Amino acid sequence: MEKSNYKKLSKEIENIRKNSTISEFPENLINLEKKFPNNTLILQTISKAFLNVGENTKALDYLLKAKEEEPDNFSIYFNLGILFKKFKKDDEAIINFQKSIFLNKNFVQSLNILADIYINKGELTKALECLKKSVKLDMSKKNIKAINSLGMVITSIFLKDKDVEKLREAKKYFEKTYELDKDNDIFYNQLINFYHLSGMKNEAIYHSKNRTGVFII
Image 1 (cartoon, rainbow, N blue to C red):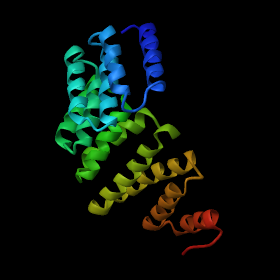
Image 2 (image 1 turned 90 degrees about the vertical axis):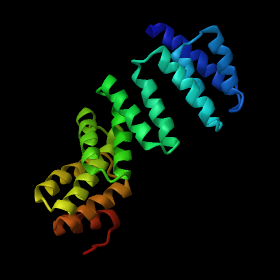
Image 3 (image 1 turned 120 degrees about the vertical axis):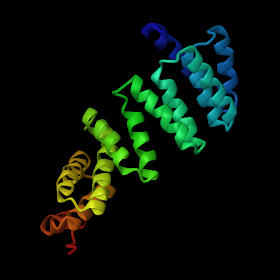
């Protein structure tokens, strides 16, 4: 779809969203799709609308229809991954997230969600691979959760194999997370806990004092 047409259609979809209730939105989008048959942007939006009202089968049907129309569209596979993840069908979700990455190697969102699935499955090496690719693509605050997750995964691997080099590697990601968002208590506590774990007591004490005004030894 040409960029100008995409913007025009996106505006029309947004207008329908603003003027529809949640329950009306899918049917109003279907009426729009009649004017633009088989448009994959509309089909994907219809799928999301049905998903939001709990019509999971219809949501899947519209995504599969979009895939038929545009089999090389990475966003369709991403949305299929989201849908299968919601269905708790991890194997199907993984296949679709992997396909979206194959079609768009710079698609950070798929890398991050795929990493989350692998973490939940205990497949830390695969999660590590996804997160390293994600963080290499984006080490900004926008991707801070992935940066933090990368530190956590490397630390978990260290606890299994006791390779001290992994602690050095994890350290830079925890410190980067702190650098990007110094006001986030969750990330800050993880940095302090990491310093304790890695034997960096002076750093742990300093940051505990800095965060709470109280030394924790």
